[in-house]
Image 1 (cartoon, rainbow, N blue to C red):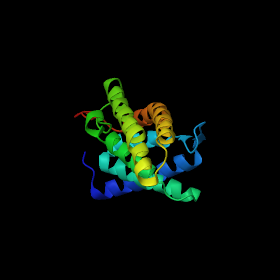
Image 2: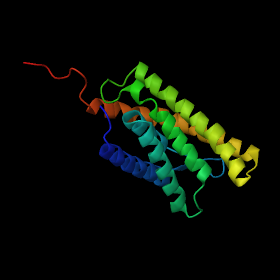
Image 3: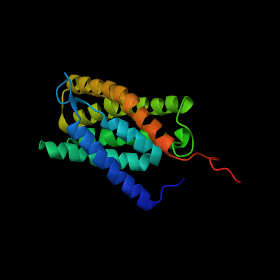
Image 4: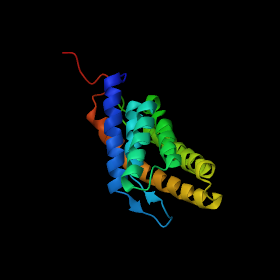
Length: 182
């Protein structure tokens, strides 16, 4: 099932709004400064698996920018870009996970979680710290600790929240050959 431009725009808007609400109002403080335990990446992973890389990239980018803007400290572009990268990679799982047409269990759950683990590691252990150093001259030891913490927390919460959301979403969709001819 192809995404139409309208369907994609609506998915981006809803994904960004849900990302914002979860990231702004359901953020759990962590022991690492300026880093939270976040459930919004489970939502982002669902949107990536359901609608693809462009939708998830833009939902992550817009949602994270809105979170930073709402706190009043300014937009931390390195982490906004990292959220977009995470969404992009999670969205690459769409054609392998097939949420709209197949049951989300077993092999598809493993595939989904491999994509989200790679996405979170790349976004938070590579992209965010490197951009923090390049854009803001942040100390390397600080940003790599933040990145490792963010990656670990996002991997765990996405494995739980994202998997549950994908199971529920998949269960709500009619599957191939689900209609019988009488």
